[in-house]
Image (cartoon, rainbow, N blue to C red):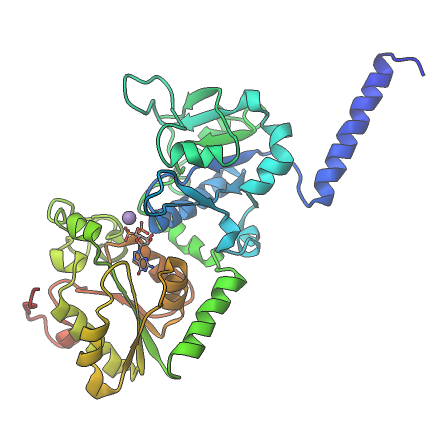
Length: 397
Ligand code: GDP
Ligand code: MN
């Protein structure tokens, strides 16, 4: 056969068909509307989960496939973050029922060479970031920025500043503007240096949590713990956020009336008051009173405690001894299992300022399960929650 232009066209066609059917048989095809990638580069799990819901809402608004990034984790003493595949904790199917998503591992292995070849990898940021009069996104500068993209051997060849566009696709025409400025033919992939989302999660994206479902392994472990290590009957799940970083964060509560996840109880415009020290770091007295009161109301037989530092097992144990209520915790620290168990409790008490608590609260709201917060409503003690508005002072420690 003579090699001419029509043969080479035929060959190109053939290769395209092979590539196309190959990706179809793997259940993957190139989304003509494009893709969104991002690094969950801010904070630990709670912050990343808030951002994830925002990114999901944003991807839906722009009608692009959301590439599910791995979770960024930090191990004590290690200088680089560790990337844990998204599906190590969550199911993909429920997310698919809301919007098109795919794992970043899959995207990089099967589609990236075609839709996002190395010479077209531009990073997106609002404006120049990184020190020293920097003129680009510096998407890989620092930890976890560098280690995150390095996990997939991604290097960027340029930066794109998307400001003044923003992510609030629910309350404006902004999705149209994104599509106009970055149409998917020219920009098949928008790769953000940080999450395309606000923190804390916007009210419109909160309920997307119903599509974020623990995978079978986590759910199974949570159920096994409840069945195997706790007595039968109603139990209360509590979150005690009391590590050293939290002590420090709570010192600024007076200057930050809506600190971190506080809008989840105080409202996004502080409709329900301003953050207090007690809301951020409830005293021992508040914790014991609250737990006792809910145990009584629910006729609970056990309390499950999740904490980053002090689980207060002995204190809670002696306070609840006469009620024959047992106190439980995981032997080995496991944040995701803690969250899954808290999600399954009959009542949950969380810390309103903590985004770790916010995860549980949202999950339970989505399933219609009851939750409350330490020291909230403000200035009402657990005992007179329903009767008087008397301003009760709690004992400090
Ligand atoms: P926030 O700082 O409370 O808003 O929540 P983040 O998730 O952003 O950061 C707190 C981190 O501390 C979590 O991701 C966990 O690694 C750890 N942590 C906090 N509370 C608990 C807990 O109850 N159990 C475990 N195992 N870890 C926790
Ligand atoms: Mn945090």
